[in-house]
Image (cartoon, rainbow, N blue to C red; front, side, top):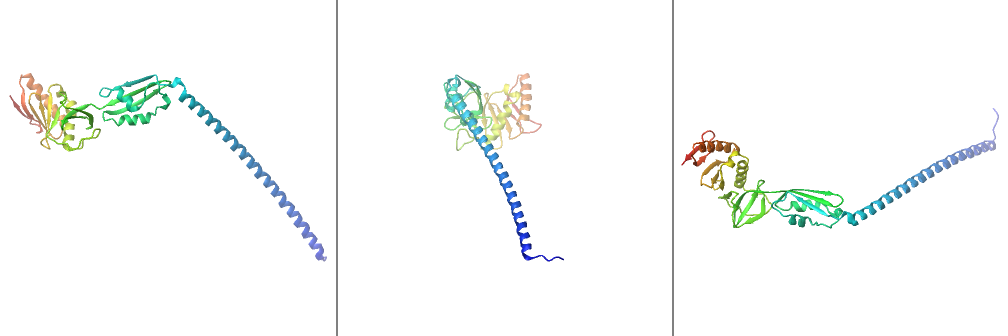
Length: 281
């Protein structure tokens, strides 16, 4: 085996290390070049994105400014539909709109919220018709009975106290008596159990056929578990506290039968399931 001098071995190691250093250096240069290209592409894409967003924002600003200032979009026609109890003027004043106002400045959600604060308003639908028209459709609350506490207050079918009152009773609505309401807040629902019972009875009566044959003037709630209707002829209809629709059906049969015989009742007690007690004059 030939003998290798230490100097020869050192030269080989140096040559090998030099080659290795060159190889690593070459790969590092390639890697740096790839990273630079990635950053350049990312920067280009970012610049394009910023420019596009800026153009869109500028265009949107211009369009918004044009529509909010151009007279072609000023309101020329305001239509209010289905209002009976509440005036057109009060509706528009509550919404804060008028003719000449820019249509795009009208906040439909805010206007709806303001109108629903009125106790007489049950529902609202606001529609914009471009370029210069707005339609307001309201659903109002109508009273189905009244009660007296210093003056007459009116209640709708949901038990909501309306924001109207009168010194005189409305002859077309029954008056609930025999119960005291401690606090009256317009736009709130009645929570008293007896008034809820009266409310159920009135709703059932209004949906029945007998409504067209008798005129109810008073609803006596002085007995906590009994609803008593009193007609304009001072006739009493004792209903109890349940099954009002069924009991009004029986009442209609009784009234129709008596009318066919030219007879009338003084009182009818409908609390008994199959045997109504009829007192005739």
